Length: 220
Image 1 (tube, rainbow, N blue to C red):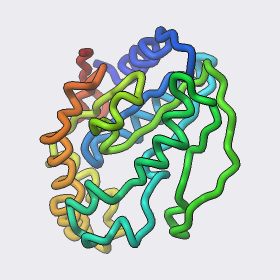
Image 2 (tube, helix red, strand yellow):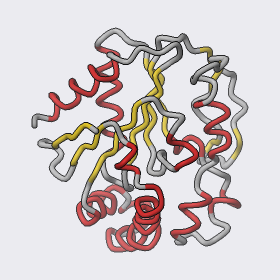
Image 3 (cartoon, one colour):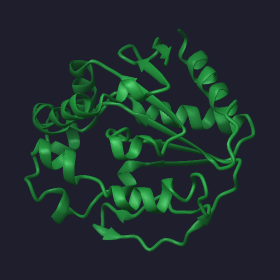
């Protein structure tokens, strides 16, 4: 199916939801499956339809380095367990925008480059806004129910690894080193996520994203 058609269909599904609080859309998938690209495209489609969109990522809610890397910089378990500050993610973003929430929210808790917590002034949402969040582990059991619409971006590990290694080649010094890190850390952690939480089962929509310009979609 043409990519633009899938984005349009997803946007319409979300627009059809009628809630008394902002619609919280989560986009999950293994690392480098194409989550961020899809999230940006979906946000643009919703904005074009006249909606106000809050756009952020779980990567704006990292833990500080001393926590992120306490099990080692290349540790899969460390990435899986320690990379993100889920408590802040829930308390500062998902819960305030959910049922009986006060609508005061933040889209970031840590400045990753400075490795410092951000004391950002809270914003105030309106009930007709839409939140779009992307992140690898969003549909862990203690987070999944805090989303009103869940999209899983499915991609073969090898294809995602090639994409990710190319993207992170400069950061890790070479394509080969980036690929090694994906194998040992990011995708080893992603496999734990799939095994322990079965995120596809909980998704409202699954996008098979191996071919970027010709994805397919299944609705649960």
